[in-house]
Image (cartoon, rainbow, N blue to C red; front, top):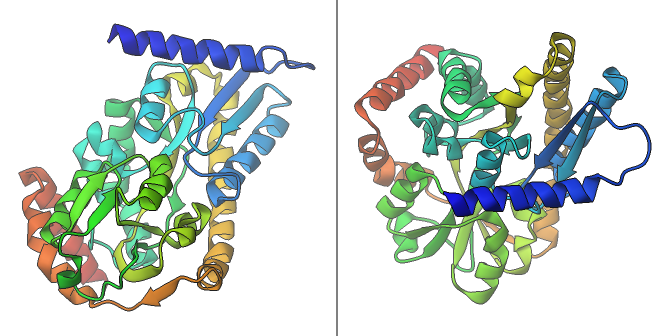
Length: 330
């Protein structure tokens, strides 16, 4: 614990030294933001827009500084740094299962089929429960949500059926349901920070990874992976978040400005996301990646029971409710 506290203060000192010599009028509130994506990703562009409108609408009282590509911290560490009041903002989703269980529904494999399902969950009781528990149990406040698009498996051999996965070493984020699903499918899932994936694929430490099209392209995986296997196993979203302590420190007028800017950031990012989804698949094909159709029903059938059985009794109840809501909606 003492080592971690020392590391936090060293990071705080580095940030202070880096930002302490700026010229011009200093803002009353400076928000340090850690992102895992690089400057070309829609999340970075959305936070840039967020910073611009916040600075404008607050008459310079608020400023946002963005550190992409995990320069400041990896996702879990970024959350801990926000909780320690060292930095202020990041993006996160099912990684929050490390703090509260219901976050597993952000990215539960084979739960949702499309963005219609996703938005129904986000805007319904499950989404409200997530945002409440996010504040109470992780000390984070959601400023909106970003749609991620379906997650697909990349590899250097085509994967059409779960039988093709036998023994394949797949990088997954540190999310229990991902480990459960890929283990049940016959692969060897390996949790790993996103910043380590490219080098690990290049060196053969891992053989495959899974992410949405934008992340596959953004990370340059076409250089080290040949196939995009269209598993579409997860429809998911992430939350742009800030620390609740940091939010409550703001006066009411600035809180209102931040919340409205968060809504505007979400709308801005969604426009970028839709535009990007149209182009990114062609970009990946142009870079030499081959798209493989898979037997999605076989994937779902093989891991469905394991995913359900991995849930706690309370989460199983929510899972059944979500399935019933979907049936009623159709």
